[in-house]
Length: 172
Image (cartoon, rainbow, N blue to C red; front, top):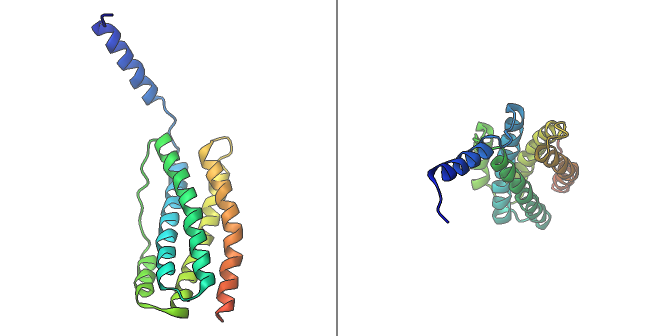
């Protein structure tokens, strides 16, 4: 079977047309997905540090769960970024960079306090991002990611508060 230039060209145009009409994220969706991606990656990195530097078995257990949960969320965000053809640009907040430097030098309960306070700050931000993502009902992946993140946030904050209290710290 011979293929004509016109036939191959038509198939190429059709394929290009399908690519061009792929769904695209709104700026709000991109912003919330970028925020969720950033938080997830930072929380995962901090939790990996906790596995190495914490001496508290409960803090390590919490860190393992965060890593597991965030791998799931991160996979969903990655999938959505491919679907919507955008690449999240991640910026690490200055306060987080400073806390990370302190975490690298801290040990024991000092490390745990820095880690848990940072995690609490990110969980608060995750709650806002999850609410924004969930509000995009009818827009597929983004609202599903928000719904899942809301479930995680609901369980993390009480765990963080309890861990801080067990180590003699209060959280605002």
